Length: 178
Image (cartoon, rainbow, N blue to C red; front, side, top):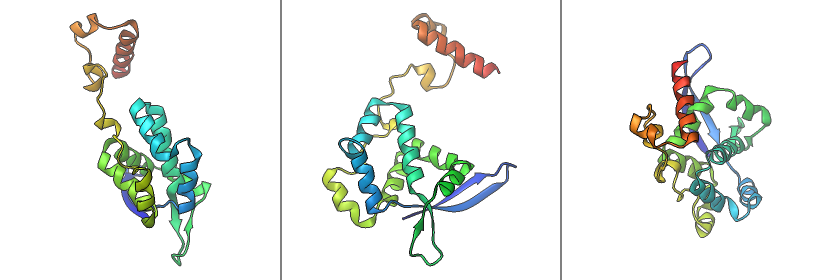
């Protein structure tokens, strides 16, 4: 089980610091492994290599949603429900956690390791650890420099652009101007 203290703002802009709990049971982890061909580890490696941002986001959201819950008062159960999941997703705590996980490889690795059952480490090592995959920031970024650097392209860069890249440059410029 992972206890994660998250600081975020409420709808009125007031800072809130709250503890959230995340956990996957052995059965849930087995279901996730069996739900995708080749297992979860292989699936994560494939989507990261493909740099499919939508699939990476969907997978992280699923892992977060499947692991969020509340400890019972007696400490014997970990309670999960659609209501608890939606309550978390509808708060800025989710945004804070999600941005932390997708921008920090160590945070993502610690999160995945923290939600797994303690005695599953050896079993997962045989298939390959979930955290030994390169996260997007560790892969080579072949996007144009002006996109990577979040700036307007130079005249020289614009002269070399394809039609689609020019359209993207104008779309981004219009968004900045709004």
